[in-house]
Length: 92
Image 1: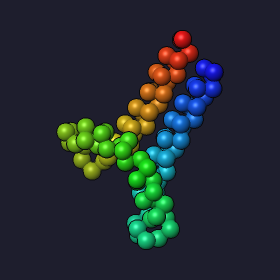
Image 2 (image 1 turned 180 degrees about the vertical axis):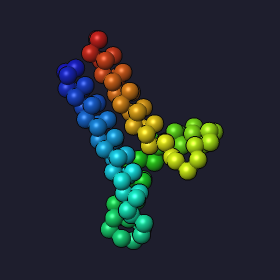
Image 3 (image 1 turned 135 degrees about the vertical axis):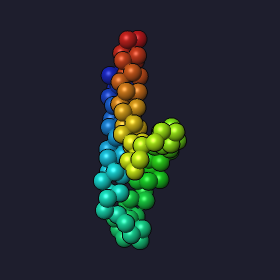
Image 4 (image 1 turned 120 degrees about the vertical axis):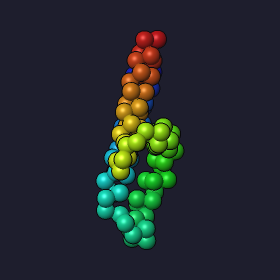
């Protein structure tokens, strides 16, 4: 039971991180919102924006210039959170 739950948590975190990576890659190529790539990019924006927005608000306090590190922080937080939750589950 525990290993199944841990596996599900890791799979969910990997899906979230993959969605963030795809969003980052598509942001370079999908400029037209009516193109097929633009529609896919819009889907990933809607899917990942609730995860990214708190980090973007946090980073808005700092002067990061033209770079947006919110995706990187979101990926890091997802990985750390999944590891902590899985370790707690495996202890009990």
